[in-house]
Amino acid sequence: MALSIYGQSTSNEYPGGIFITKATIISAEDISGEQLVYMNKPCDVGVRLTLEVGREWQPTLNIAGNLKREGNESSWGNAWIVRAFFQKMAMAGDIEEAGGKCTIPVEMVQGLVGKQFYKLSYCAGMKEKDPTKVRYAEWYEVATIDEGPDALHARFLKNLTKGYPKNYNPEAWDSRKADAAPATGSVPQAATSW
Image (cartoon, rainbow, N blue to C red; front, side, top):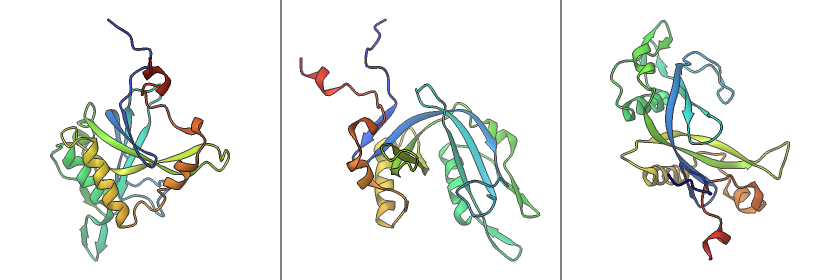
């Protein structure tokens, strides 16, 4: 078996500091009701995924949102992203809501383990503690393996025309120092000119 001296990568780099990575879910947990740093109140429904992305670390990805409530009626509101994720992962079942609290059936959560999808990370500026390093953020939408990374990239660009995500900062990416770029596993330019 040959061993590559350049390593393996599951990432695709796009202009403007956009990276799309193939991920495999290695664990999942229901985080419905948890307070997440980036939300003003606890999420009504959500799932935390631990991912294998072909690196030395295993990142987590939270997919969460809040329902829209009018009187005794509830609709998906901005939690539509949770519904869309479970649909993309071909999971069957219903998320239960009782007394204003949501729970995702254990079978649905456990059924996510081993599923693969594409996730998108983007440049969200420079780190405050070290302004020479890029700060990355994760986009809340994913693509199935069949859809592929280019479909996810196209959806991201479409959302940018609507003003989302608000913290995307391609200018920071373009102005960064060369060593701030994350390793993508690509062959260095010097190695390709024999």
